[in-house]
View 1: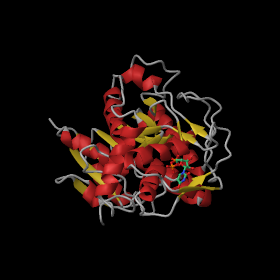
View 2 (view 1 turned 90 degrees about the vertical axis):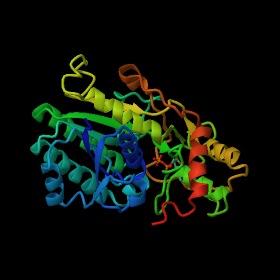
View 3 (view 1 turned 90 degrees about the horizontal axis):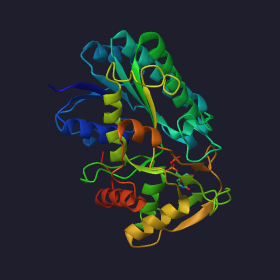
View 4 (view 1 turned 180 degrees about the horizontal axis):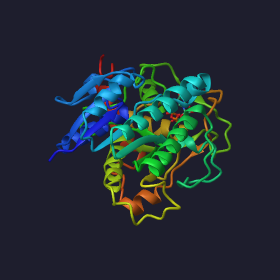
Length: 342
Ligand code: UDP
């Protein structure tokens, strides 16, 4: 029998890739999205979309009261490090407060499993690399802080109310559904790979390289780019591990009560200049770029250790190579100059 899932932010970039995967497996999916950054066209036919704000408690309550939810996947959030440095309270309120409200509503309505889209930004300028789940938490931005606040809310929801939760800390989500149906479409776009592709295609001015004086081999920031379809797969693994009773063998010191915390990355770092080279290889033409000041809030290096999810769930990224990731992003971008066109 199909399971029933609520996906907040399911019309967004990463959420829509999970929705497609769940639908392909015959699951029953309902999406809650305010369409501020998501796109109706990113959803498969037949998926029920409820257009509402997360702040609309009556709408959220009404939906959860329908019952029979096997899990809630919570993607809906503001997601830019740079913007969070300019609007810290908006980030803290929207992400942490509304997310906590959602967790409380899930508990009230008897939802047993909850998977949170968290982020490598909880680690800030981590002294270690690669970063394991138990590395010191030190968010370098209100964005990272807001997600960590939700991780803690889930810890307490697990401890007090028995909510089983998965905290998935994405490193840099990138690429597009290999079938070409889904991709990245932000307005304004702020992410490196789509901007670099557009610069290579002559659709935008030269890419600004934010900071060329970091203590890294070529002076630019290093990130761990992970394919969005591999992130989607990790959500299904998290779900399997949140089956009540399924986590009994876990070491309680290493995971929060009744749940899993996993870092999701390929364990390989690439500098901004290396990404520009990969885009140039795929596009067959150089990426015009110029140096620019550092972007506030950016840690110099963020590379994941994915040892835990590999060991616990056998996760193996299908698209670990940067050129493959860029190739799927390029194919989508080239075919959809206006994104979803809405
Ligand atoms: N970046 C850049 N120029 C841009 C956009 C991003 O140099 O126009 C850099 C950014 O400073 C960071 C890396 O590219 O070091 C990845 O940034 P992105 O915004 O894609 O993801 P984030 O790491 O913020 O999640």
